[in-house]
Image 1 (cartoon, rainbow, N blue to C red):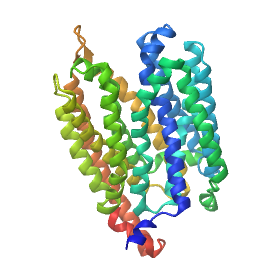
Image 2: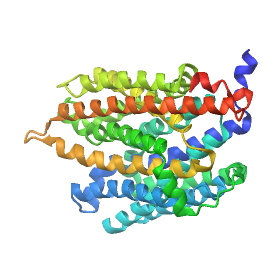
Image 3: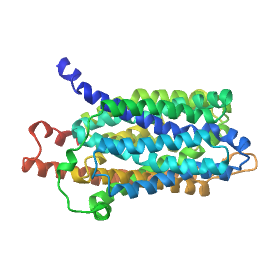
Length: 427
């Protein structure tokens, strides 16, 4: 029994999981590192807060748009080549950020980085769907999604340390150099992924995109992704401001807050993924939703709060959010047909990026800052987020039913091998 548990993944599968997680880490770190650079860039580039906000949102919107354009071609190439192409483009954009002498140059560099970086996660998830059976995807997603937590742990302290000692450009040089090493390892050791190319299709890129965005089940999945992004992106932009102005924390305490929260997220990510496979993706999502709603209800009502309690509440909140992210990613991966996976994941990633940008803008309209610096109507924002979580839970229920029905039909027609039929119990 122990030997069976130890050999769940082959050595090559472990390599694939690791390389995809590290790639995700570099892409997310490139985005996260901008947060601690805000105060430095405002001064050195002589820009205002709205211009800095544009630098941040430019990445998200360019990533979303590029994902839509890439969707029609996503299933027509070897996934390794596609991943290499977009990762090289992402690294080139990061180098341009490292060279940026002016605000205008940096803005263009962030747009270029977003155009390539925004497609990487969709190709990665398509690879996971191609290579791993449904009953194992929860734990795979659990490992890959820890990249978000790892970037959170390292993004603020590493960004500040490098920027203070070597200038803000050094943050992007670090990512570019590390990413180049990762890219070389991927080029040498990753095998071509061409299984989806054996499924013949006479649709051109535009027809392929049209079919993907008009499929009823796919549309429900995209709507679910929209609501998932809404919850995270509405609270995240104001997290630091709420912590310092409303909760009474000092700026010097934020790295500790985010660091401990991220460390716990890294620890719980694989556990959540394994539980998703064991008790079911939707059940895990529902548990995460209940935890998240409870924590949002408490957190958005807080006043002056000691650091230890803020850390505890943040850890529980992020465990809930991670449970939703990991389980929903695994469940949604079962929605598309094999010949549509690349296009579906590209559109899904675009929807996530664009809806996240829109959610941030809506949050900016709801929340206002008083003359004392405190954020007002943050509790109202919390109610909006909780409402989106409830609707998302209903949509995920419909998607769970669709996946179960799809697997039953495959079982009846004996399309699914015997060892895959256990997915019926854990979908």
